[in-house]
Amino acid sequence: MIPLDPTGKSAHIVAIRLLEAALSAHRRDAWKPSELIVYFSLVTHAIGRGWGKIPKAGKVADRVGCTPATARRAVGGIKARGFLPYGHLIATQETVERHATERFERLTPTAAKAAGFKPITYAYKQEEQHLLNSLLVGNFDQPVVLVEFERGGEPLLELWRHQDAIAKWTQAERAFDMRIRMGEAGDAL
Image (cartoon, rainbow, N blue to C red; front, side, top):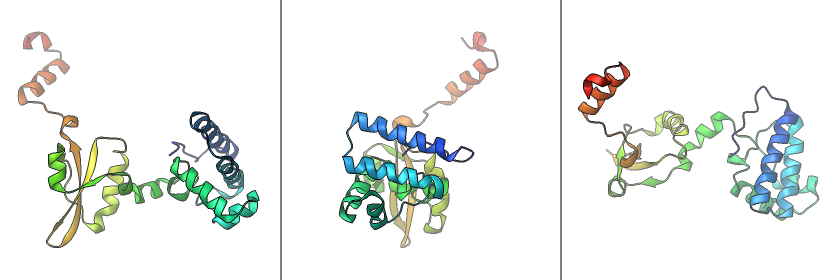
């Protein structure tokens, strides 16, 4: 996903940034010609209509001059490269949050414990999914997993972090850290 906030920026600047990112990715791992032309078309048409959901394959095919099947394959390839997050050129924060749980591996409590993970949140119910999604956005690319289980027949989700990434301070270490911050390090040693 491209870390770009389109608010407050000229649409042309946003388009340039998107195209620069695509060209940079193309240099590292060559895109198919159909992917390049479809992405270029999507970006140039988005300048006037906004950065939301991309059009259907038939409409993209008409603009580019290819078959709908070619357009679908190209869009699929672009999505696989992370350039159409959730079917958008630039996904809104709301869209990212709505789909946040999709980015995390899901384990059972037994498998999570065996892999060295420990719970860091309480169990979220289905109606609390939006709260969990908001929390998950800040944990992208972190050593965390979602743990799925049921309690009383109700499906629940928890966020678990790997034990190596959880701070393991003893009470003595916390006290020593506090003395350092208060300028008493010499007395502590």
